[in-house]
Length: 308
Length: 182
Image 1 (cartoon, one colour):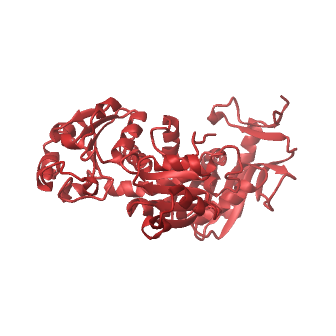
Image 2: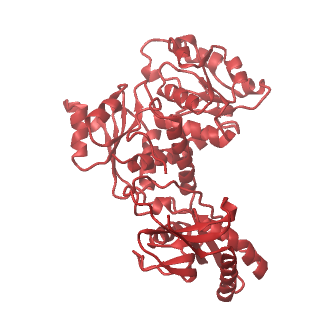
Image 3: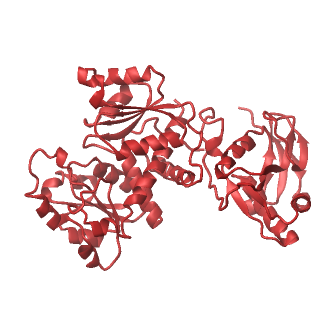
């Protein structure tokens, strides 16, 4: 029988292809579960999970919370805005205080890259990274991989273009690792100011022209322009960005094939995606959201099963 | 390793025939009856039984596969987690007579988990249990089969192995073997 090689999910980088395969296969079973008349299974009964969010999140937190509840875990929520963090408590102290109340797993989002890795070294619980700064967002990458596999049957040999703000995106980095481990080809596309230097050292193709990128790919994973992380101007205006990198129906109609459109949300409608694309039959954006719950259930279930 | 044959291909064939006749006797026209095979191995027995039952009764009988992995009570107590299998039930069991089909009844824990998992698909009117092999005196739960192929006396130190030709084995057969000691 199979289990994960690690008791934490910190990033995709340290997962093996077998681990990813196991998570995706298990998620398939959970997707069936959440489409039943009764969507709850008792697997994580008696396990307590703390959702610790030091950074804002709606979708990811809801998705995790729902996944935990569907698995019958007990859930506590914590967000930094109304906590002792404001009074100067350190991260380890905060989390250890939560753990002393007999908590088994911690799902954490933090604005500092590496925060979950630090926590994993210093506390006893299983840690799930729900996004650390601009570093990794493993569950998003897993649900993206799951959604592509579901739509196209396999990831092997598929071409995925990640388009937009690669520089500030943890989704991009986790996606690159995950897709490559599963045998897909990856391209990044965006204005040169939003592409990290040396990104090609990760083995991805780099393209500045969105038309060429769309022509090349089977799947376009369009990222949000993260204005909140941009202290300086990376491009002249949103209007100009939308003109050069926004995807609309006209652009898709020029292609001689059909491609799948993905977006991790939240969408800036009219900036990176026009509404006629976001709501079209090419888009699997809402499937991604549903798959997110199944994938997170799989991750929590498999981590809980790992023997120390 | 000691290995003792309990049922051979011919005997298994006869038992499946008998199961079909017993089911017809108790469920008449199968108007309100469904069969659920328990993953992973009960499904194989069901796959053998269903076509025979349809041939004898002349009726199309709804069958489904039920996986109880997420409902088991030994999660985190085993060395390795069990891998989940497909649940395929295209109907609600609300108000139906359900026959759960498994190959070997041992501790009764799988059946308990299966009944728990089944409830997610509705409240059945009646539930029956059909097993090919009933291991006597090994039960942890008060669960008894309504239909069994053979009842055997076994020790905790023994396995009951069911082999199917359709699963790549030489012939359909039921064996009792000794567990290998570490």
